[in-house]
Each structure stands twice: as C-alpha cells, then as structure tokens.
Amino acid sequence: MRLPGLDLLRAIAIVWVMLFHSFVVGGLGPDWSWLSRYGWMGVDLFFVLSGFLIGSQVLQSLAAGKRLDYRHFYLRRAFRILPAFLVVLLIYLVVPGLREAPGMAPAWMFLTFTLNLLIDYGHTAAFSHAWSLCVEEHFYLVFPLLAAMLARWASWRGLAALAVAVVLAGIALRAGIWLHNHALDPDMATRNWFVEDLYFPTWNRLDGLLAGVLLASWRTWRPAAWQRAQRHANAALLAGLAVMVVALWLFRDRVGLLGNAVGWPVLALGMGLLVFAGAAPRGWMGRLRVPLAGWLAAISYSLYLVHKAMYHLVQQQLGPWLEGRGLLAFLVYGAAALAAAAALHYAVERPGLRWRSRWISPRPAGATV
Image (tube, rainbow, N blue to C red; front, side, top):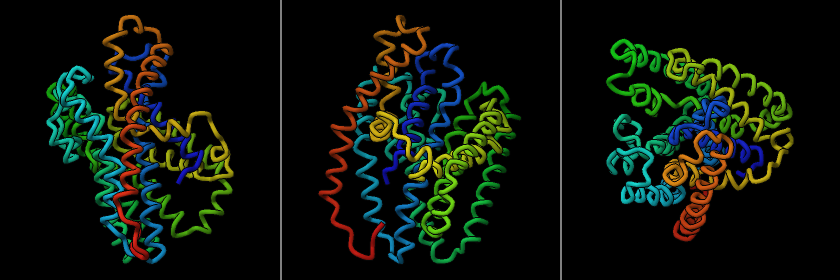
C-alpha cells in the first residue's frame, strides 16, 4: 500500500527520530531543542503505520474468507527485516569504533529480539534503538494468530470491548510500574528504570499498534463506512493535530506519571487520526506530494538502523567544528546518515526483497496473507 500521505508521515517520523537522537552528539543547541525534544514520538508514528499496513494485509485475507498462510507471512517479513538488520548488527559487533556508546548488549539479545526486555541500558546502550524492532517482531509473531482467532469468534462490538480493555490495562500497568519504581528509586540513581521497565517493553507499547490495527479493521470489515468517513479526512487531520497538542502537553515531563499513564493512548489517538487522514487519497494530506518524501519513506528502515552510528562517526571527525551550529550540524549529520542508509537500502534491503520474490513460491489460492 503506497499512498503519498502515508509516505509523508513515514518521512516525518524518521526525520523526527533523527532529530531526537541528536543527543548522541550532544544535541543541536537550544534553537532546535523544541523540535528534537519530542522526536521519540516518531517511533510511535511508525507503530501506528505498521499496525495499519500489516493489519490490512492480514485482515483482508480473513475478510475474503481465506485461511492464513503463516509460513508465507513470516518468511516475507523475515526477508523484509532481517538482511539489513543482520548487516548492521554485524558491523556493530566487529567495528566497536562505530558504536555511539561504549557498551553493547550481547548478540543473542538482538538475534532473539529480546533486547527491549532484558537490556541493561546504563551499560549497554549501543544499538539500543533496535528495541523498537523487537516490538515490531513481537507484533508480527502474535498478530496473525490473534487476528485469525478474533475473526472467527469476535464481533465488531467484541473487538471494541477488547480494545478498550487493552487501553485501560495498559494505563493501569504503566501507572503501577511507575509508582513502584519511583517509590524505590525516584532519581533513577540505581538504574534507568524508565527506559528498561516502562519505555522499551512490548506490553507497555501496544497503544500505537492497536490504533493502527483498529484502523485496518475498520477499513477491511466496514469498507462502506470507511469510504464515507474518508470524506472528512481533512477534519480528521485537524482533530489529529489538536490531539497531538494535548499529547505534547501530557508528555511535557517525559518520564513523569501523567504522560506514561495516560499519554500513550492519547498520542496513539492523535497519530491514528493523522494516519486516517493520510490514507485518504482526496484529502489534503493524501494529495500532498512533498519532494523526496517517498524516497525518505522507502529508505526509512535502513536510515533508522544506521543513523546513530553515522552520527558518532561524523562527531569523531567533525564534532568540534559542528558544535553549536544547529541547522548546519543537523544537515551534515543527516547527510552522512542518508548516504549510509542509501547504501544499505540499495545494496542489502532491495536485494533482500528480490530474493524474497524469487525464493518464496507464489501464494496458493485461498491460503494467502
């Protein structure tokens, strides 16, 4: 599914994440802190997009009355994700000088996608941004199985009730984790429990994926209602921006209780409205074709994998000269990351997709995802 509006959102997400990760090189100065401060939200936008796009693939087969070919689905995701990831992981392991932090978790945590559950962030922060890939992999593993079960037994109202239960359980779980850890170690002097217990674990990051899946369910199971609603895509865009303002306010203290208890579902709602607006071909966002947005969206996965290592490499060579130069610094760091990401995308990621189409047999009729 390639829509200009969704490509634009994906491009915004990766640039926003790159701005946030400028902390790896000491930040870009006070003039840009307002923009980079909330850049971590770009990951949540990726989660909503993933829930919508992958959810649509899976649910469309179920809506057509077909059984899911799990082997085909998992092999396709493996060829899409693993080649570039394994190449970057190998580089991190054999070239320690490229690591943006001195310590790195053992390889088995990356290979088993358990990094986000077991990491000692204070001592092994290198390539820690792979935590979000772990969340994605857990989603790929569980969602087709869950979707097949719900399609057989759940009604539309049952799905809505389940979604509400997931959101409320998430609020209660995160609030409990925050209160427990804050009571024991309010200043995080012993360990960074915010990252390890709240921010990284999959069970605390379901809101964005859930928002995307609900959009996919609506689009798949109620297509007429979806089409009618998309006439109001511009209103959804404005509403999404308004909800995003509320989310920014809730997360004004990123590690505080308010944001981490109720901020995540509010953020997911705002981004879900933006994705809905981006998926409407006739809406403002759906018709907007920003130069290079499609290309940035295409290489966004490779760019996500390599940008922190390239930041570190540029800092080693040009760090003193770039310090305090704000926009110029980001352009230099960003250009290096783009060059490395393009090389990874064209040399590894795209061949992986060609291998996928060559080695995976055509999908049998009636058994597709």
